[in-house]
Amino acid sequence: MVLTDAQWAALEPLIEACRPRGKTQHHDLRRTIEAIIWRHDNGAKWRNIPRDLGPWWMAAQTFNRWGHLGVWERLLEAAQAGGVELGMAFLDGTNIRAHQKAAGAARKGGRRQSGMTAKRSAARAAALGRRPA
Image 1 (tube, one colour):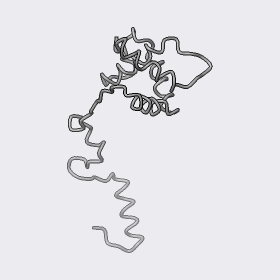
Image 2: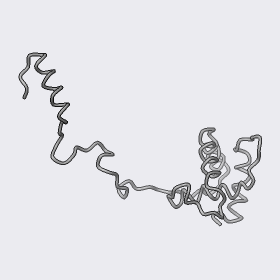
Image 3: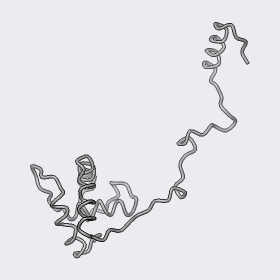
Image 4: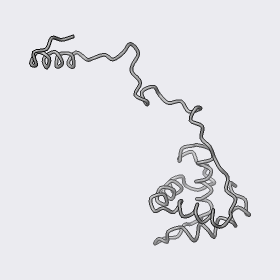
């Protein structure tokens, strides 16, 4: 279990007040919310959600749909207004490594032109009457 019964008792009325009403009701809303919380606590991919928390696609679909509909913002506002104790999670960017190309870093050895790019540059320079560097 991700949420204790006391935590769920505090969150359930807020979720019921904020969530959209659709054609079909959630089969087990608590389990879906716990799957979403588990995924964000562990930083895992949606497909890695444990099977006992229900189908991963249901949690992912609910999270994305509620995000587009503004449910998460309304839920946060309702929780803050209602005095619910909220935990905070911090993500420190100094511990996350990205590939060098993700930031637009130059390749080792500087920038190289392909053969075709060099020919085009030379042709453009010749057309403009400039001497290639």
